Image (tube, rainbow, N blue to C red):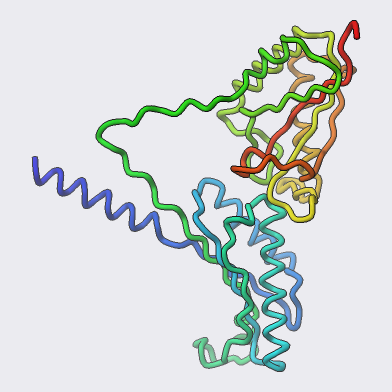
Length: 284
């Protein structure tokens, strides 16, 4: 029995070490440029997509240059490259609070890379290194701790209750995949309940407002599926079309993207949201 316990503990410990291993990615740049080349941006977006299921602790971004140019110029250029990568992360709904370092390191000496072709060496040195540090997994306890019940509002109940023009109902249980206009699998049941309540409550008209998280200067985020910077509108449209399929009259609805004008604060996942603004109530 003791041997079994020891083996189990060692297995969990080894899994913990592996799970804590940093995830890395490199983005390469053209000579004297800090704009991300299209091919490199596509590679970066694939890397960002792979982080959807990762509980991120921190992200470090380091920019580099080749040895051509003055040290002061290279230091500035490497910082611009690091900043460009940070912008892409924020535009794809990666919270800036997770990014702990955005540093330009200047030039990399030729001798660091084991390669005889000087031009190839310099090409490999014009880069940004990204290091993602995941949170360690939580090991299961022998006794389950009591579950914390989140005090979230019952949206169907709100819809069926007293409403006035100007009221806003936040769909707190409807969470979106990072960078996409589609809802998470666990949100679908709640969304169906909301649609049913709206079909039954046919005396209200409303605007579906879509939101995004983590972008700079209240900008909209990029929809990773279409590559367009209209993710908040795409989310609102997704809900609009879902409600229409479930039987809500389109004449009662409109949709619009709110970009990142109204962040809720707290966990970024709650800013990836939709809400409805009541614009008409029958009898008012």
